Image 1 (cartoon, helix red, strand yellow):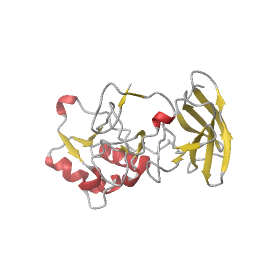
Image 2 (cartoon, helix red, strand yellow):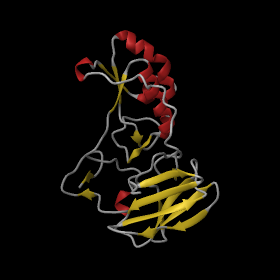
Image 3 (cartoon, rainbow, N blue to C red):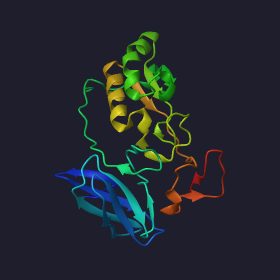
Image 4 (tube, helix red, strand yellow):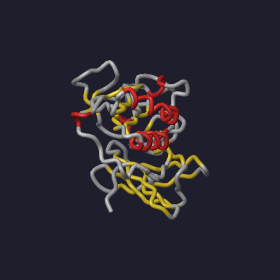
Length: 228
């Protein structure tokens, strides 16, 4: 089976790790929780390193050690419980969805309410939005659009300086909180939209250049370097 980059929990206490790092010679998984250890990955092809590791379950926190010298979060991390500079965490991607009766809405029926997760409620979390979904629906809203929630530095900001595009912001509730919100939206008959940023990454916590040639100097943005 071919896996995308990132950590993938396989069940039976095993996880598969895969990372693209053509600029280095060796990559190790440094597991920092629950027990410190190092596991070297196999250099397979076209700059990819990978390995199946036992005793690596959801909740396990890890970094990639590059060329035996520097530790970096997983560029394809799904969760950063300690923020952009901290270790990545293996997540169980399964979820008990309760929206089997949701089949979406025609685009012409979308009446979009764009909200900022960090400021929409005092708590500033995905879960805190759920009790207010009925209120939005009663306003006539049919689709809830979340401003960018890819992991960014700090606890609250606009989200346009995210640096880990697959990780859901930890201070908002992480991937589990986002799933609960989407599930609740669908149960209320509301579409859920994610605003995403594809053309750049923010500067703080952006370690991708340590792994490979991700960026170009040809274009500049106020938020950070542009993708190739």
